Length: 142
Image (tube, rainbow, N blue to C red):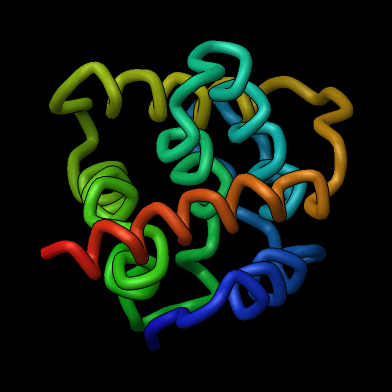
């Protein structure tokens, strides 16, 4: 499956509501929709200028809805190589491979153990559109 528009991605993110991530060592089960919002919000606080990292945090939880498809492959065309790489490495490597991965991993883990109001998904539409548009322009230049 390849996501071709921000609208398709938003629909998928909305579909995460009521889908639960299985508990892991030292972490509770979480609603994937709320977890995605919390992870993205934590990344926004830590790296306010890094929209691609924030978007990776927002979409990192869509994997269970895409099985057996790879979430990195699903978003790469729409959101770019970096977001795809961040997702791929996040799911394949238990230990972070660089500072971006470490930041994503920490936000993911914190998003499993804390509960706070992280806004609503619609708040992220503009950021998703910005990253998709930037990726579209970069693809046209290559």
